[in-house]
Image 1 (tube, rainbow, N blue to C red):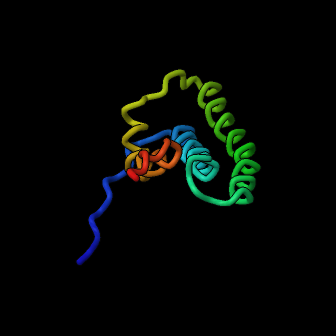
Image 2 (cartoon, one colour):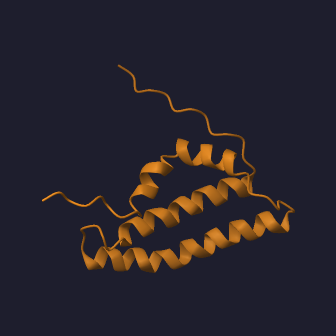
Length: 102
C-alpha cells in the first residue's frame, strides 16, 4: 500500500519559502536545546551554537521580504506550508512535555 500523498505546498514567493525553511530550522534546533526533554548537554550545546547562524538566516529572509516591499506575512498561507512540512510535530518539541503521571 502506498503512503498518503501530502497536500501540495501553497504558492510562496522565494522569500516566503526561505522564511518558512529557516523558521523550521530554528524550531528544530530549539527542540534539541529544550531543557525539559531528555538528552545530553553536548547535543544541546551543538544545537545552541548552530542556532546563531540559523537565526541570522531567518533574519535575512525577513529583511529580504521587507526590502522587496513584502510588508505583510500571510499567516494562513504560511501556516498551510508549515503544516505540509510537518511543522506541528516540529514545534511541539519546543513546548513543555506533558507531566508524567507517576
